[in-house]
Amino acid sequence: MGLPPNPTPTRSIDDTPKPTAVLVLADGTVIKGRGLGAEGKAVGEVCFNTSMTGYQEIMTDPSYAGQIITFTFPHIGNTGANPEDIETVTPAARGAVLATDISEPSNWRAAQHFDAWLRAHRLPAIAGIDTRALTRRIRDGGAPNGVIAHSKDGVFDIPALIAEAKGWPGLDGMDLAKDVTCRQTYHWDETLWQLGSGYGKQTDPKLKVVAIDYGAKRNILRCLASAGFDVTVVPATATAEDVLVHKPDGVFLSNGPGDPAATGTYAVPVIQQLMAKELPIFGICLGHQMLALALGGKTRKMARGHRGANHPVKDLATGRVEITSQNHGFEVMAESLPKNVSVTHVSLFDGTNEGIEVTGKPIFSVQYHPEASPGPQDSHYLFQRFVEKIEAKRK
Image (cartoon, rainbow, N blue to C red; front, side):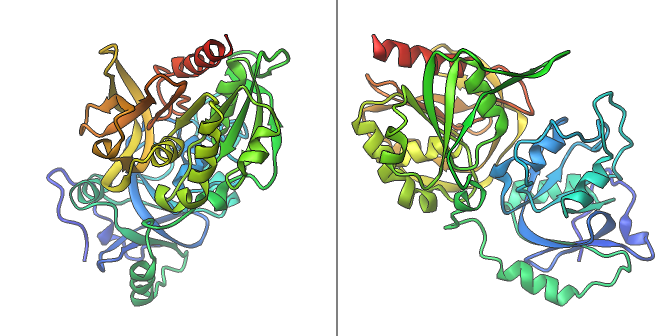
């Protein structure tokens, strides 16, 4: 069984005599295609990302742990791959779904073909399928569980793959932050990339911040360093004492994967203890959800989630609209927030919560990714806002 017909279909891969990859969904749908990347199989939640750039950053974003990414943009691979454009050393995504074969690289920074990069990281991919139809299916029915399998001999045990997709528990109730967090505390001083000089180094920090790593992207840490912070990164399971021993001026709650309620079982008490110390706190993505839970709010799984670099968000205080980079499948329930917490940002796509702030305190968070990578830099100002709140608190 395949996907419903597309009004403007691409070439059907079902005409291929011997497909070398399949995407099998939990409902029994089997989508045939051409295998790319590494041979093998991977199971996960099948989602889609609408970004036109940054596929390497997306594949290495720890927030994609447990997910198979369908890229809606067809020209994946056109900028190649390089050792600089990664958000973590070990990719967290489990596989990729593409409309067409990987493009030949055409970029002066390219050091490797993207297909070779996928093979090097043991990531399977499938190409030659109707990603528009698959995206519509996810949009209308939610992100399904699935298995992507790549075998050059074209031999697949379809019943076994269906059973594997059905048997995968899904992201509800799954704590994945422990899988992608750092294993020990470390110091970070690398700053944002600049044309002609590459990444820099923060040699004269003005403030100290401890970043709790629920699956932090490197560019977030670079943004903090570029804003003038001396950055210390601690694991997701760090205690309040582990944070306070560094005597930070503020605490940063990072992005990350999985169900926030599951991660919150150990993260929320720590955040509550830090709030009791009157420390300035800034959270993004999973960190935003952790903060909301610590304040007494609730989260829930979204039908399709937000994943892309073109999401409009409105700042309710200024009326300003930012185009943001997003990657999340859970949301904060605005109606569950206590009276001392105000909603600061909302999505102009579906009205869901995109930011909160505690009244009278230097504690705030946003659901989206102000560091971008990939995506627009409209929201970089939030790192400076964090600095301003810390400085105001010190005065």
